[in-house]
Amino acid sequence: MTSLDELKRTLEQGAGHAPDPAGLVEQAQAGAVRLRRRNRIRGAVVTVVAVAAAMAVPSVVRSYSAEPPPPNPAGPMTYYREPYEHTLELASNPTYFTMLHGTQGKTQFLVARSLKNSSRDGGGTVAVHDPGTFDPTRLRRGEQVTVQGHPAHYVDKLEEPAPTDSPSTGPGGTPYRIGPAVGWQDPSGAWVIVYESVDRASLLRLAQTVRLTAPHTAKAPVRFGWVPDDLPVSYTESRDVAEHGVEAQIGLGNPDEAPDQSSPFFMMPYSTPLSVIALPMEGIMTMWGEDYAKRPMKLIAGHKTWYIEGNGGPFNNKDGSQLLIDAGSCAVTLTVKDRTAIPYAALDRMVQNMIIGTCDDTSDWQPIVGP
Image (cartoon, rainbow, N blue to C red):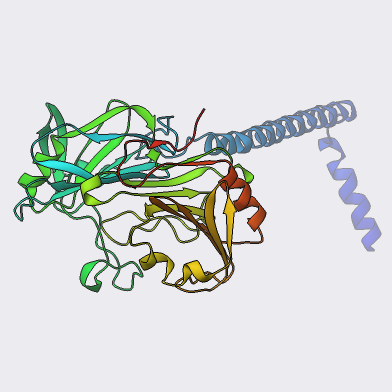
């Protein structure tokens, strides 16, 4: 028997078990419907998942981008005073006098000394930081004390020790950092810091005399009616106690580098675009040199003046210039950092619009700017 005969017999035997053709078609159609339904469900699920994922990613991004920045430990920066204005002074007292005071950007400073020239209490330094410019974190970790009836803090070390390779050095060649200090926050938001006293008791005693007043413009023996490029006042310093010698320094324009307090005292930054120093005329040769009067002289607004470019005499100012002004009892020095930016003609005009008082005392000192 051939293979074809076997195949025929097998098909005939299984014919009785074959499903109804109509039922088979219906089952096939029903299966197709179920398959299409499953595919639609799968497609819908995939679409929902994709949409959810697409919506979730921007939501996460938005949640991160909307996070507020960490709070400033110094608090909000709010308007307090102009850079040329003072609010800091000492109350009348039998122990201290103000040797010098001034402003440097957002900070005011005052150096107090003892009226009795006592080695046990030589005074100290007071700094007032405008609102939002002083981080009180280390101060608040200190001992809580009371100053003038309000809470304050005392610390043995206000600032962390400086790195040993720091370029800013204090007495003895060690990096300078503020040590013992007492401080508190004024209702205005400004922070008052008292330091550089001989001991804790002296700090607290000096702190009791500190007062903050309404802002008022710094005074000096010079008053400006015009300055080159409308340069803003960035630094002021005055020593206005006649028996200790009078002096005034004014910085105009913002320096290139940030102020670097490398000693207990504040100093005008070297890169200040235009600085003005007023001193008593007596003894000015220490600053101007013995031969200043041998240079060509020109009268400006009735004052004898001498103009020096670059290095000359005691001045080391390669790219800058100096204008020396003999104004009677006052010797005024204008120092320019870059003479291409501030030429001689600008200094001439500045002096023409400048009022210069006396340096014997402070009786005729005026606000340095204003109407």
